[in-house]
Length: 386
Image (cartoon, rainbow, N blue to C red; front, side, top):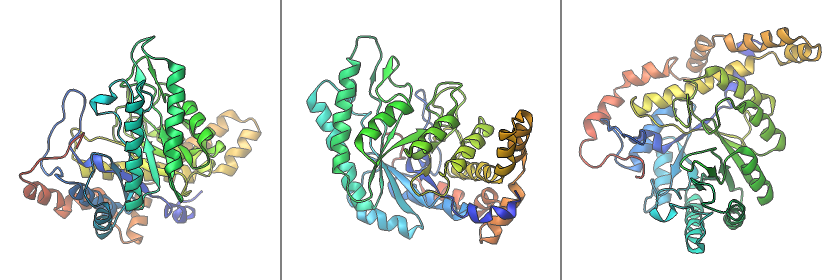
């Protein structure tokens, strides 16, 4: 296909950015501070709006509760809209309170499970105020040692808790259940893989969906196969895009393996997930040593470039080669699209929409980074947990 044939499809792309990407973040060993880091949720949103301003790709911002708690979420919603973005997914947090050390929705103590459920009810109330559609749940629940907990009972408690949370949703609100194969639990994790997430979501109902985080898999996992399966089953609700070399590294998406990102997006396009409002594209990254806003700009551009290549794949020729059993011919067609350099075409396309051809250079020349570094002096910089 020619680039001119996909320009209309590119208009459909929207990538939600996470509020926590603009605060200080790092590893379990060190979180580095940096000049200009937001000191309030409003400053996080203002920074996120810069990404959308220069790329046109990031019209919404995900919030994390309680990290992004404010007294008036209606006012926060209006503030975001004034900045040119909207508030998106609400992410719950049942992994930082001391009471959750041995689990939240899967804890042996009913009082702890009740606390975790009530936290999700609070998140739903916030969704009502922000107009958010998705409640995303990631659980750190699991065990470190064989025999530490009863695996079967924990699954029953999980199902009961999720059912109670799901029943509280209203309108078009959705529950999106994320999985992760290990960490911080090392022997077993209660929602460890796509099959476990899918099993619970299928039992809950049509408004329960699976969230696929690209960093939450064992080495060698064929993530694009999982994408194809979840799309086939109608249960892929959202992506958390990031990049990994070893485990859940949360690096800039496409940094470690841009070919994998392309392969994933080929299956997204093939399965009807692109331009589909039921499949949310999101980032879940932390910028430890690089500046936050440029890191997010680079990230959304990487997704856009991989998407353009996936859209350029000659599906008709590929199908013909596959049906003819032409192994190398099919692979050549697949690789031709990947090797296509779309950067100049995308720059021209952006300029035709009134956007800078080089968003990164335009941001760096705007003076915004220097301004926030000069102005955001005093107060407490936001970080993980705040």
